[in-house]
Image 1 (cartoon, rainbow, N blue to C red):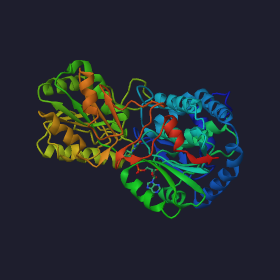
Image 2: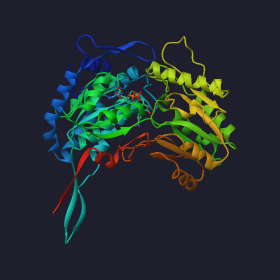
Image 3: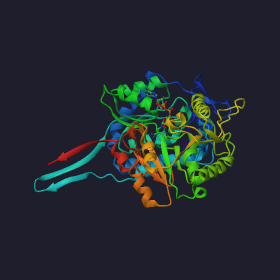
Image 4: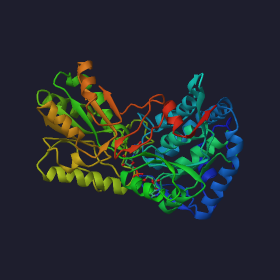
Length: 475
Ligand code: NAD
């Protein structure tokens, strides 16, 4: 069936549009185990066809002006808004995240907002010099076909983070979504494609081998990858033969440092959501919280109070704002890390006792205190609803602990003294440091990691430059 921009599709309409006529892989709701729909299992031949079509469409798209491409992107944003509720419902059922809170409706809203913002940025050729010796200008030309590979935690929003700057810069795109959330990305692209010119945007929903073929393909000019550091390392190796451009948004283990001058009650909500947004399944979530000994007990108590009152449950229930883990392997990672923390003698303030007999991959909101810095729950990325809270007394030593890991995506400093917090931020090795908040992203602020959290930037004008081939004209 066709979903026109003007009509408001239901989630069932979207499923009809993207499911194969027969067969496919059953996708199960992580909250209930119910069948959400059937995902196509695209093959290498499907990938070849998508790349060929995207390649054929690219020159005409690349020849348009920024304003013309921006207008088409705004039409795609209109289409998303017209179908927002259906997209949010499908996302909630397949990914597990609730409709409300900073979850499914919020994610769909971010997709259209990011498209509009990315369409609006100015990127004029830069005049490098212009004097009696001559003139040089720096332009950005389209790269060709971009391959976009994404994770399952924010499947629609992260796909748009990859698609929007690619299209804006005159490229066409082939997306390989996570095998855990293909229907969400297929539905999103289907809705966008009701408004975009034909063949600019393709989704190939295969397993990892399809992703590997995309990475190796000679007609793919660049890979935008968001996912784990391990998969990123493999992609870097596999892309070497074709000397591909890469943007690597990889794993993190963000530290937050709370100074002794804070008001624990006043910051507790923001601390909580910095850590537990999307039930902790967020790349730049607060994953290790270092709290000064003077305010340690107060911060722990205030966080427990918030945690106790935040409802977790099935996503389609309008009351819930925390959901299940998206898949069994992530559930096991979280459960094992919390168990290791308990075994080491750390103190569970709340949670840590999942009901194994209940349906769904629900792990309760968990806060763990009196935990050592070298405990696996601190040192490894939990990517779920379990926050370790580490007590410190010496600021220099805690900055060293925050910087000790080989990842550096985000970090935060919490203090009543903004200048002091800014000075501490300058000593933290991460791509973004927030002050008195954690994890806020904005299409105008470049986002990327240090160390093994990756390289390349997304968002803003800097993000656009990463989707263009720089070309100097000198005369
Ligand atoms: P993952 O690395 O397992 O998978 C990500 C994607 O890569 C999937 O589509 C997967 O099918 C594909 N893939 C895996 N191996 C591949 C290969 N060899 N070649 C081509 N494609 C391959 O990650 P995940 O479990 O889906 O996501 C969670 C991880 O992503 C966490 O570590 C999280 O921190 C990270 N993440 C980072 C950011 C960021 O912006 N830095 C954002 C979201 C998630």
